[in-house]
Picture (cartoon, rainbow, N blue to C red):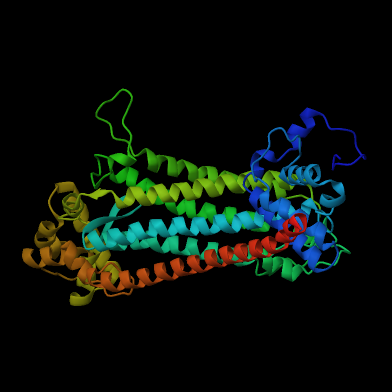
Length: 497
């Protein structure tokens, strides 16, 4: 029996190929099998389906392959699976599989089941990158590097300060994904097509058997909403924006113009014509994939923006955007984590960039305010004029400050201030500048140990939450399989008896 029924004639091959979701259903096929198992168990428990019929269906499902059959001529895997069951068991038995459910609630449930795993995988990839950052903080954290605003040298900072900034952005990404998980982990099953069903199904128990923490209450909302997919895409986009900024820095820093890092050969590529080249291709591709993930997010929003309630096949076009974005995000972060942990830092080159430049000029301005009681705006003008003279003459700011401060301060602040060369050198020294920072969260090297403890604690908390949620999903799956095995054995016992 063709489960599509006699209402419509056989669709054309072109129309079937156009509407089919088989190309993407491999992502959810194993979940579809589990949904069918849980649903049949619920039907048997409610005595809506005879136990013998239910056990035969479950036994079939336990042996069903999640592989997509290219010769199935089906619209989707849901149809393929049911047709295979009907062919194997007969419609008198397998015909009960869809009793009280629709492809609408089934696909919405399967998508959530796959997406919650992928969301956790992305949290894990974020954690991998964070681990690499923490390793660099531990190893090279006290090294001084230039800090940039507008891609111009601004102030010296430590490498620890730089990489904990990246860590913190990623920590928020992980937190967003874990918050998403709470809204994602609700079951649409039992909503049927859109209005619920008269078949006696305990939605709460069915949700629990599939590892969900509750149900999507409104049946129409359950089958037709994809806001969790959009939220996941938004989370992936934000995560990739953060990853792309780090990738961009590695591209810049590995250039001869910067010379800050040397990327491992395993994460580089040569040129087909220029034998000397070593290109940061992994970082370039991460940067590009951030744009692709953003495109996936925009595409999903465009598909959903004007859909009337409830289910429309337009929703089918959201899921390819979702899976592609999650794949690209997870792969990018994992590769970036490996590349970063194997990158060699040229500490001498980093520290030489902050030696003798003008990036500590605000330290001199603060000194003038504290020690000579002129306003900061006056001190800013004085030091700005000294920095201009240094830039025009090519002299170090320390030399200009010791020789020209009296005349410049008299002109711009109305007060003649003098400073000797040794004092100017000490005030403008990069390490002294950092050690003088007093605010919490600043780049004082004395703060590194405590900042590292805080980030390590946050990292461990994220990892523990990740393990807890993955363990919960595995436990629910084992419980469902045990229940299914129990009822499936009844068929074998009857047959052998």
